[in-house]
Length: 110
Length: 112
Image (cartoon, rainbow over all chains, first blue to last red):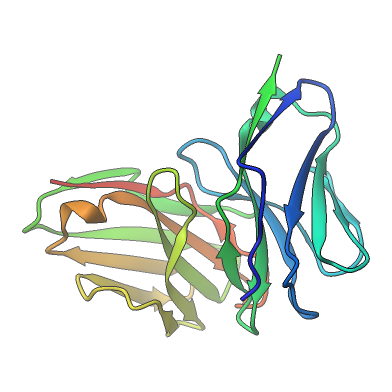
């Protein structure tokens, strides 16, 4: 199963873009990259996912490298409410089982 | 609407008690999941139901017993739990097992 590697923690100034990197060098051709975040003691919140192409929605943008071995989640204008643990996840198999890493703890500072 | 609800929010139980956790969704999703999350760790998959049938059991001890009475409801029956079972129990649902999972807020369980 493909695994992900993320920085343990990151800081970002409020109003600036937060760029969260993720390595998934063993990803297979049919495996998706998903991003979820978890604010303290709440359930994980879906952010975005992609296979090959870059994706954007109202929450964030996902940039996937051409070789698909890494990706970056971009929160364009971080707010204090974006402080959370961000999980980069590669799904596996037909059942799209989520393979969770340890995540990045993002602190947005005023 | 991507809401999954879970009750209760918090639960304290003794090792000899029997209790149940409840999860509900009204999005027409046909896949539902139970996860367990310990502090500072990622969620761990416990069970997957697809079209009301158990499709994945991640070698969970029998003191945890899932039930899917209909397509909107998922229960987790708890019996003779141990203190190490204290955790945040998360429910999730998706249109099917190949689609995006949406999580509920979780039940915080403390076993004394």
